[in-house]
View 1 (spheres, one colour):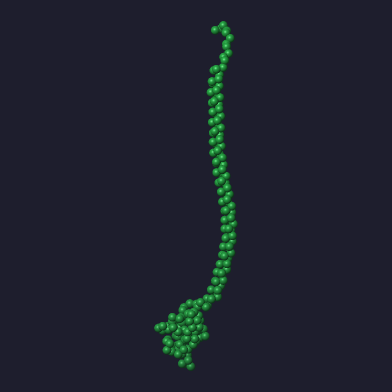
View 2: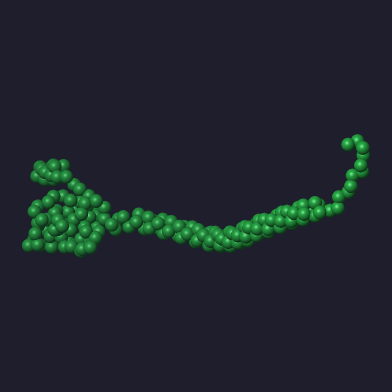
Length: 189
């Protein structure tokens, strides 16, 4: 009984002294556990890829692990990773993926709506561009007509002025040559 108690206390103290870490076996391998820290020891079990393990101790290139089934063994340290396995994270990753896909679908719908709006705006812009071209054409036509009216008015005024001047010259030449009325002779002078 004393030896059993001593073994139990030795085991308990060993567990308290040795830090236990949560880890997992790399997601891309399937390993055999050995009873000691090398390939030369007997195979004591198999560890599946992504399986959660506890790190009990490390010796050289080997790590002693404990499986959830309480079996223990040694595996090469390069295949043991700390943290959570990608297999354990798979549900979270799938949920994140579903959320991202929903977000992408929503953004695709928004892009379609925006493209339709851009098409509408481009059509309206084309209409406005046509109106601007028509207005510019009308403005040029009106400016041309205004220039022609200015020239026409100038010619009319010049013509009227020339006629008035001609009439003045003619009147000026005719009036002095008209017979003069004789003044009655008054004796007053």
